[in-house]
Length: 292
Ligand SMILES: [Mg+2]
Image (cartoon, rainbow, N blue to C red; front, side, top):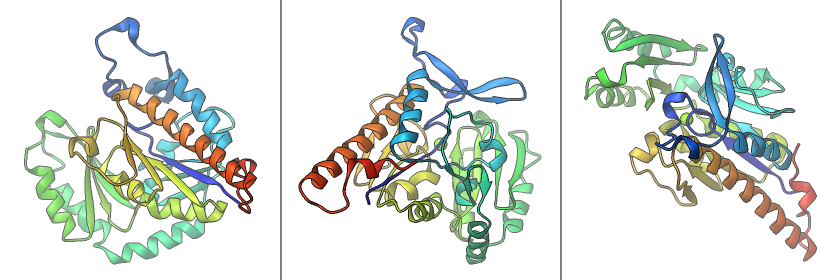
């Protein structure tokens, strides 16, 4: 049986805050957009109307797995077209949700792996030292798994992220700067491990992935095909890996391009499987690619 998992990051890959849209200067050329998330009564995240429609197609054509560093609560605010994805990975791989409910056995596995690096409390305490600085807006601990600062990006001291990265690396932790957030995440807590678990559970033999930040790098490397937008942390670093496609466009239009490319890749895979099936390769059929 042939099936594909499509693991897709959310923020600045699939959905975009107003500040991240990059609509360009011509209002009449701006794409039609819909609201993907409401927070405290305000629309805060968007995708293009075409992207939203294609996500519905992806859910039908593959195992579409939103794969995010968001906590479960933050993830629950994102409104996918009905019926929505069956599986999701949240908390940077800390939770696998099935129909919105976390898998307890996966959570236990993750917590066991966190013994390989410095404890959360040590990193939280390290960040607490800067928490009162004028460039720090908030200091948060996410689901007892990792910690992050919300900062005024333009006031961020120039060496802060590099210094923090070195300090964390010595303790088995990873640092990622995304928009206004500086994340400190245990190195064993990865999106790729959780997505591999989902792929095994659904019997998928291929994984396609998309993401824009350092916390997506392991996911993109592990995938059979990978996509990233022409903006964000990885783009600014000129990050590459074999089998990676970078979008032509940036901002919310780049997000739409990623969804279109993922859908095309799934359909091409289905067609190829169908052709091989017709040629007598056992188990490879177009129907089998429809995962949900
Ligand atoms: Mg992202």
